[in-house]
Image: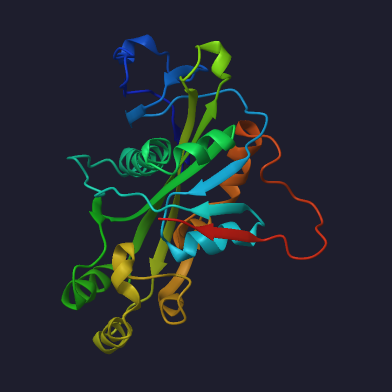
Length: 289
């Protein structure tokens, strides 16, 4: 098991008068700062960065209730703005690359929308540094990516394939920070932003016990598999009964690798996630569309 980080930058496009920056301009694994005037469009890839001192706003670019709950569990203060992406595989068959691409697309789509949409420009300006978290989870069996079931028949088929076998769960996480620079640096009326990102993935191997047709049918009839990759949730009351053993991070299977997220954040953004005693309940979440 080799948890990894995608450190190569593939392409980045910028509108509003800034010329296209080709991939040859970047050295994989090296720190990069990109000055963006008003509208960044990060199409794909990842840029390795030096740690950021602080953020004043955190956005989860996911509508997954499981990811929301996990971030609340670690007392992270954030708001939810679900990404509007189609999760198309774009011909990518390598699971490590795919989850990182999908997670990064989600994060950067929300970054662009927060800056561009009417009513959010003022909000972005008030927050000098905003962190957007994108994530995507896939299930892989025999090198084949298993998505979410399209209907109950498909859910039964997927669970039958997983029965008595070991599959891998990959979750990609993309951390994207955009920081507003001083208006005086570029003149009045222009809002420049510096865009920074880090993308990584985690893998967990999961072994199912043998499942009978009756067990599969009963689980599918409850509706729980329909919004989950591989047609099951390890955190479900019944889905948990199917798992014989796992190798790796349990929370990665739920949909967000908390340990890896914590370790990456310590070197990417200072002080956002920490282990300390809190008096009272500081968990906080707001939602926005």
